[in-house]
Image (cartoon, rainbow, N blue to C red; front, side, top):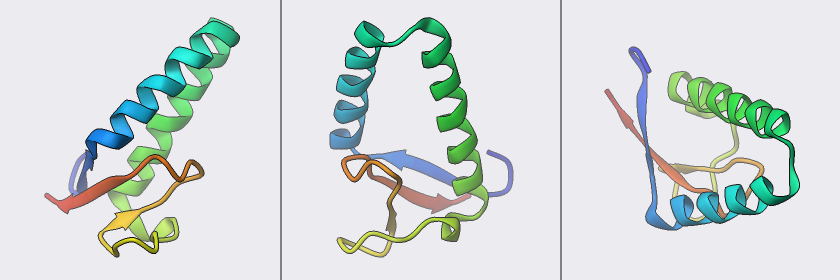
Length: 78
């Protein structure tokens, strides 16, 4: 993440992501998992460069939301 924001995941978000990945590993193919991982990385890169691309959550303005409301992260300018 060059010249942007560093994304810090909450402990809750990491646990939810881990549970989601465990479920998907049992129900998705390796190719589908790889495609999802690439999509997540692309979204994180976009967020690190422009956090206003996605709507802020109602909880706190420093957090942004993505399509999964259980995944939260904080952005720190680097």
